[in-house]
Image (cartoon, rainbow, N blue to C red; front, side, top):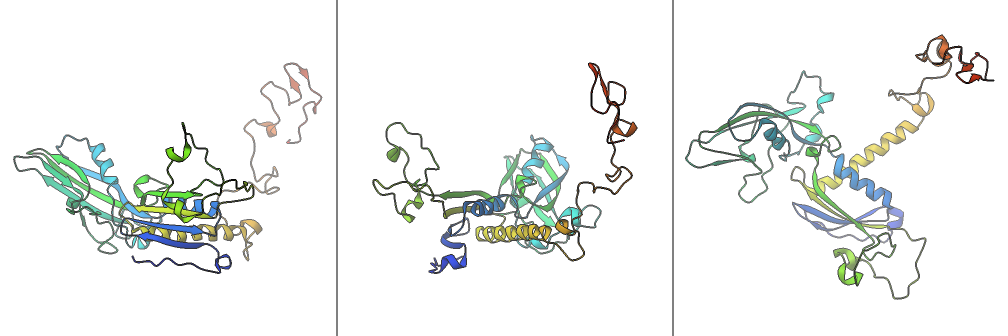
Length: 338
């Protein structure tokens, strides 16, 4: 991942501009300019919570003589990062026509380890082996990013102890559960010199010495002594530090985040646009909606109240014109709903 920083002279005409300052297999740092804070924060939130990945969702334990409970082990299995390369070809379980799981919507993994020596035996993510048919030979494989290529530590077995389980990994997003998160953390910063005064720094004696400048302070000009405050200034340069959890490369997280954001905006435009053959603003919307006026016997599509007699009875008796404090002047029992 070699990127050359690129400066565009006609940036205003081209819209948002991305300038990459660092990129490796773990993180990517870049600057987003010519954009407002709403767009920048939307991209950050999408990268955190709405990029599809794959993670273990179901665990069936057939043998467990370790000191850890089944539920504890199942939770640890769900947090093991799995390679999500090609996950876009995998269906969501709710979209698949299979009965439970198949190669089109899931990946099966097997873990079987037994300590037959005299010392405790650690069990790592490398011992988790995919089996069965898959859409490719990479998706669902445990991520082994450490120097020894062992992966995450799952548990330790004492002599004679055994663990045997079968897992089913499915596609999902971090908005459903954090185990599907593609990024361990996303740094987001703007206005490193606090010119806009969006941050009120707490300090004891001197704010400049107690709050050292960030790494991005060199990218912008510091405020001049006696410079008047600009009440109309808004942030337009944002600095991102995207760190991967291992299931997707960091540059892929950024590109997929932009792709997901484009899809969400396209869906919004589609719902707001009047499609041919649609019904105005709703278009082909088939989700929940309010009852349409005048479509039923009661004028509201058949919706009635649970209080009988057209809904004009009150819990105090009578037909709605009487209260425990005497007769009210409002209809004397007549209701517009009857």
